[in-house]
Image (cartoon, rainbow, N blue to C red; front, side, top):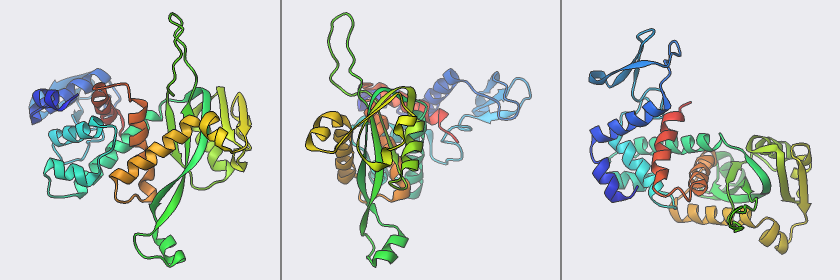
Length: 304
């Protein structure tokens, strides 16, 4: 959705609310009291009434907008900004674009959307040929690290992130054309460089029975063969980086460049949320204007 169509179709609070209801109706509403799925719509209250137990569910209830005091239009404008470009928007810039006085509600809203993006991507696993490697992202040092290193505020440290790329080569049966682009990606923050953390992240991200994983010879990858059909490892070298693990390293490089150019600082406990946004948009890079509607759906289905 471009800015002209957004303004024309969703330029008022009522139009945003109606659009949200339309998308939620497609997904369906489950009664929070009895789990019944058939409801009446009470327009005067902007809520659903269960046909079985008469319990009411507000339009926001059960979505990530639940308990938010921000208007539907503010949420919709934010979702538009987050999906309008390949690069990210900082919460401070979104606050400025929206003309809001307080920063905290904007920060909370954006992080809820990033969390919903991650939950949406967690529904899918990678399969086929998978490249896997780790990258170190610059983050703000924690209070404990400040004290240990005797460093001043604003000092930096590194956080370990495992990145996976589904690099199966696809070929059009009719034309014989081979797809040169990588398909889907995953990125997970690791607590350490140990094998147990790597194993857990890998197990959650892939369909092991249909997977061939390529890595370097890191000691943290010693158990991978237990989870996949085939594990192929190569000694780290310039060739490995440019060929065997090509897409993983391109992704790590692009993510780092994106973060440096957009955000002033990132704390470790929020790094996964920033990665969620980057990977969510990367996996939907060919969706065009449809990515906005996809984020609305993630909003509806992403509540804890």
